[in-house]
Length: 317
Image (cartoon, rainbow, N blue to C red; front, side, top):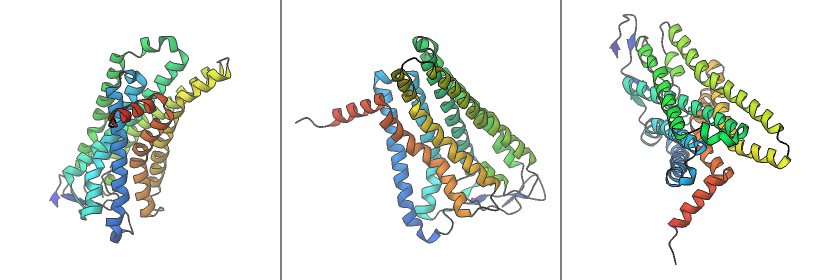
């Protein structure tokens, strides 16, 4: 441990990470499903990224936003992989203070990007349904890439103060985390100092990103529903709803575990450590596992591109 600027506390040189409480003796077996999860995440999202990059027909706003979502999800998974597999495969439960801050920054900033991309995708679907004839004129490629750049910059700028604020806290010897990775709510609750500034800024980030994004997504789908109900033919309404099906699944896969984890963190003293660990894993691993599967099955263009890719790889007789 080393002294911080606050003489009454310390900055820990390392934090202790926890795998799954109660299953410490079974870590080698627990590593098997986690390894499979990472394989599915990288393979599934990698295929999505590959077909979007190589198939010119998919160089459209909807699929470019999907590529951004896949990149953010791969980034989150890559951020957690070293500590998760380090714990379950090698029993390495220690992480340095600096590395912990870097991992926290990566996980939260990439999560903010995911949420913002989901909002951009909902606006894309609204424009496609409300004004299909002007769709390509409104969502030009420069605007799509500009939106992506703004999302990245906003996420980095919002997250930059958090590591600085954490360095101001004193931990008084408490350095055992409750997850296999570093999350901001978990870190500040270890502090024995005044965390009001961290709490206020954390709430600001949550409300100005996830909360606002979710509100705007709901509003956009309200407008989509109003537009679709105005379509004269039943076939037209069905087609319009089908274009939103995959995105609705992605929104639910992302926000339901997030809201559940937030509730668990607020009730952390009344909730078992095992449930906390499971909810944190669901929040980080469920969306990147589910989204490639959903889009591959429900989106005809993605499915067709994957079939063409596989048929080209097949050896000719």
